[in-house]
Length: 197
Image (cartoon, rainbow, N blue to C red):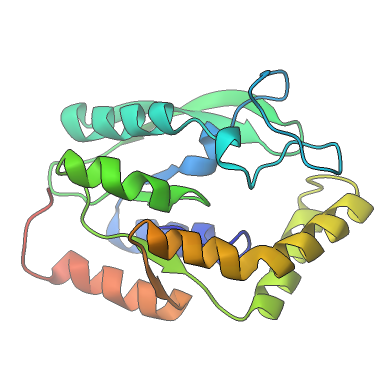
């Protein structure tokens, strides 16, 4: 599940996990650390979390493959405020569980996961750009991700760039739906016919 920052991916994944028991892999936890020379920087001088190179796609796919193959995977816990991994957590799944992989770059996994027979669906959660802007800013301020003036400037840039972010997700095979539609469709998947890949 992908979508712009602040679109509601994490909350939706948490609700579905609580309701259905599906494990969640937060793909944003696979960001590169602040001292990684390959981590791109934004014009604001902070890590550019919206740049594809800020994220380690290979580690994410490896963790998802391990989770499917063995039922467990150790994944990092990334602190955006510190721009680094602060720990690890064990994710487990049952043989009939779907795995909710959510994050800004989740659509980039659609092709490699489909090639391995691991993809059930690729969804881009979206809503009004202005609602997303406000929700993202409130979240980032509450979590103290960065100083307020940087969060505001970043939020305005993301507001401007949101159509391109959504277009990229669609180009990688994601279907764009509202958070409510996504929840209904995924709940239907849980009770519908068909087996997990």
